[in-house]
Structure formats: structure tokens, C-alpha cells
Image (cartoon, rainbow over all chains, first blue to last red; front, side, top):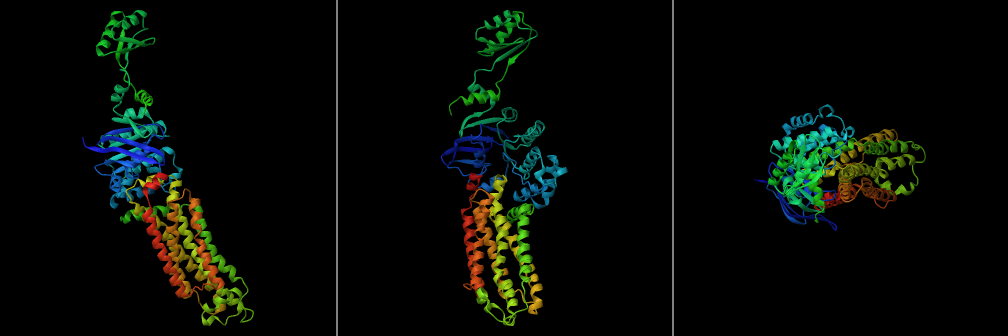
Length: 310
Length: 268
């Protein structure tokens, strides 16, 4: 896979605070990569380093095959960045905001009008295109900022908390957009606190804490590394009889970890033990309607990571 | 350097300033006072009467600057001519200085205050293009405002004084040199200094206050002229303008050299 981003030992300090501390990772072209971490973990600083607006104290990076410290302008001309706050010009209209961005990002002059019009329509802003942005809702400003990030048809997008402060409908629109961007083959780096969002959208995630990258991989990989095997969930047609629970608990390599009215959660050593447990439940008279492993959520992985020393 | 980028940044800044009511009313208010209000007020002084000669007090030194045709005017008339044509003329430089300072101070620190700076720094504009765009945004309206106000001032002065002088006498050569040669130099001084300051301070107010100190240069000119210490004759003005342009070049080069996207972003 061709790499859109390859960071190697990036370090950046502000005064005595090391905001990014030896971060190395790669993001493949067309991948949606999530950067997770609490406030102050270094996510935004990392984006700034990759976009060439901050210079690393040590380490290096290649973004779209270029070194951001040397070719920062070229890197930025091929990247779109949605900042944490929309950062749109409130005294200008939506159209003026996009036209300015088109000029600065070098959209060919004859194409500017059409490109601006398309984006205004795509983000449902055409009806208020010529009004000052100051009167827009937060969701509209965020949509305008997203439109601006796409004005030059970038290959790589950095989205810093794209759904922060948005209502569920607007958040869904952003999620759909990320899906569309993925379908179009663009690379997306998504910084978010929203773990469900990251789990739904990202191919892989990196978790930052105090400037260090403490975990990297798919949610499944991180789960396997950090947590015990996912629990097996047996669901029954009626209430779980004591005899059924006892029969399941007696299977070698299986322990009942949680018992609910119609469900048993089991810790099974392997898939064979899980299959034996299902058989034992049926033989004991239990009417099993479904059985399967419940994968750990990213949230569980994330909180498990917080307990690992950085 | 990509001039489309520079022009886009400058145009965007000017659009923003145009919609900043406080800035616009400040500029319009000062312009009205200096170009129309002040000459009208002075025009209300009693002139055309009194002895044809006498002691002009602190303005006596300026007498040498008056064209010979005006030397024989009554004392009151000469006072008015001296005040409008010579003593107050340097005050004009306040306009390009103020316009440049307002737009310049808005440039980086204003963007920082409105949380738009980060978005600007993520554009492909190089550091030099960003800096040039900001300087252009301040310089162009400052020079236009200076020329426009000077033209209005000239018309008002002539309307007031023509009946007593008997002819249209303003602008004098030195006043023209002040407007056309020194004015743009002062505009560049204001904008280069304010953009430079703007990259270093945290608030628009700080930037404006610091660049406001430049008006002391104008006050010094007025005091110098009024006291007779520094008569703004044509050679003096040409030399003074040359010195200012030199300072401008140094400040602009210094600003461009120390302009740092990294530092701006680190402080954003």
C-alpha cells in the first residue's frame, strides 16, 4: 500500500511541555485513520506538524511523498484541514469565504464560480450563500468549514473534531461525508473524542496520551492485545433456568461471568469451549435463540488503554 | 511569489475591514475632521482685517515659506494661510498612518482574536505571500485615503481662502510633496510597523496602541514646523520622505525575515 503519511519519531515541545513525543505511524492512501486521545494529548499539534505549519524539534514526516518542513506549501495545497473551531470569516458571506479559499488554494479562475456553487449546494448552504456568516448556526458554520476544506479537491483531509457541538442530524451528515470521501479514495485523518464515531468510521486508530502514541491498530487488534477474549453471549427464549446455567458453567474452559434473565455472558477459553457451552445449554433444556461473541467496543479498548502506563 | 494569493489575502482583509463599523467610522470621522471640519473652523477666524504687518508670534518663522504674492496680506489672513497651508499640513499624515495602523493591526492579531488565523495558516500561501498580502491590505487603502483626503482638504482650503487671497493658491509645492511623496511613505511606515507588531502581540488593542505611538512622529513634525525648528520646505520634505522610505524598506524586510508561521501557530 502507498503511504499517504509516514511519521517517524516526531517531537515538538512548547516551552517545557512536550506536546508530541516521538510519534511514529503510517497511514495508507485511501485509509480513514482515527486519532484518539483526551484534550491536550497532542492530536492537533500532530496535525499541525504533518501540515507543515509547525516544525518538529526532532523526527521527520512524509506527507503525500513530501517533507512538510521543506515543501509545506505543496503539502497544504494537496491537503484539506477542518480545524477544531470552524475558523470561517464571519463578516464575509459564505460565497466570499469559499471564493477566497478557492483563490488561495489555486483553484483555476474559470472554475471558481462553479466549484463554489457546487459546494454550497452539496452542503445545503445555497439559500444563504450571500449572507454574512455571523448569522449562521454552529452547524452551518461547520458545514461551510467542511466545504472550504474540500474547495481544492484535496487528496488528504485532516478533520479535527468534525462533529463537536453538532446536533445528531448534522453529525450524521458529517459521518456520511466521511463515508463518501472514503468511497472517493481520499485519505482521511479524523481527530475525535467521539469513540463510537471513530469505531464506525475508521479503518485503524492511533491513541495518543501525553504526546505519545500508546496504541495503534484496528479496534479488533487493540482489543485482542489489551483485553481478555470477547464474551460469548447466549440468549434464551425464556428465563435462564438454574440447571442450564450450572450445565454451562460446568463445561471445561468456560465460566459464567454474568447472568441476566434471558442471557448468559460467558468467558470462553476458545471457540471450541464456546461451542461446548452452547451444546451443554441445549442439552440442559435451554432454548437458545442466538449465540455469539460480543466484540469489545472501542470505548472499552480506550478505557483499558488509559490504565496502561504511557 | 504567487500574486493571486497575495491579492486574495489583501482583498479579503479589506472586505473584512469594510464591514468593521468601528474602523470605518473612526476613519471617516478623522477624515471629516481633518479635511473639512478643521479648515472650516480655522476659516471662521476673523481675517481680512487688521494691520498688514505685525508679529506672528510662533508662526513668524513660517513667514519665509509664504509665496511672495501672499506676503502683503493682512495679518489675520496670513495667519489663516499659514495655519492651513503650512502649520496644519503635516497633520494630514495622520490619515494614512491611522488607516494603515487599523488595517495592519487587524491583520494577524485580529485574525487570532476572531479564531480565523489557524485556517489561514493551513493554506498553501507561503510566509512571504501571507506577509505581503497583509502589508498590501494596509498600504493600498491608506494611500488612497491620504490622496482623497488631501484633494478634499485642498478644495476646502481654496474655497475658504480664495476670497481673501484673490486666487487659488493651495496646494503649494511643499504641500503636494507632503501628500504625494511623504504620504505614501508614512502609509508604508504605519502598515509595516503595525503588521510587524501584530505578529508579536496578543490583542488588537495592544497592536493599535503600539502603532499609535507612530503618530508622535507627526506631532514632532508639527511642533518642529510651528516652532520654526524644522521648516518643511521642499528639499526638507524630499529628504524626509527619502529617510522614511528607507525606514519602510528596513521594516518590511525585517518583518518578512522574522515572520514565522511556526511562531504564529504556536501562539494561536
